[in-house]
Image (cartoon, rainbow, N blue to C red; front, side, top):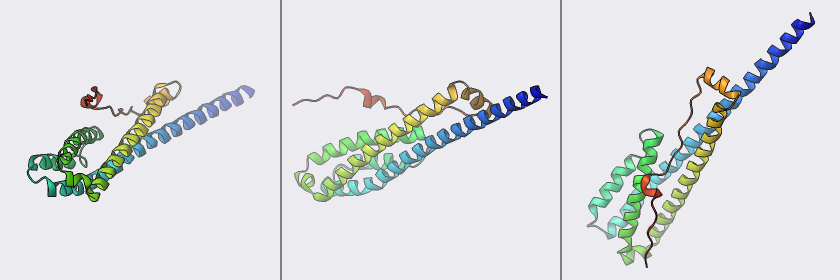
Length: 182
């Protein structure tokens, strides 16, 4: 009779451990999904700011039509596709916006225009928030991936079909040295 109670106690402990591990994995997966959603929110914010910036600059730089068309086309890529495609579009858009700001430097009246300066500050702030959201996402991905790869949670994760998430990595252009000259 005592052996039966011992076996029953071991089974209960194992079941409780599996439930606790499973719930922990669900919590971590939800955090990763929340972090990905935060990135989408910031990309949408930038998506909505860009037309205002483009229209402001367009008023001063009417001959830069090709650049504006490129910004508009890249902006469309922010709302469709996989997380990786959205980040790639965001990286391309960041590079193009740098060009747009460089064009704006050629127009002294525009550089002093309060609405342009405010939009530029908003885009910079939004870009900072996107980067923070990406770091938050990568931290949650790290925690989740570690949990599904370490013992004993890897046993539960593999049997319940949990899959690793991919990290967001910097685009190749963003990893090159920045050249500064005076």
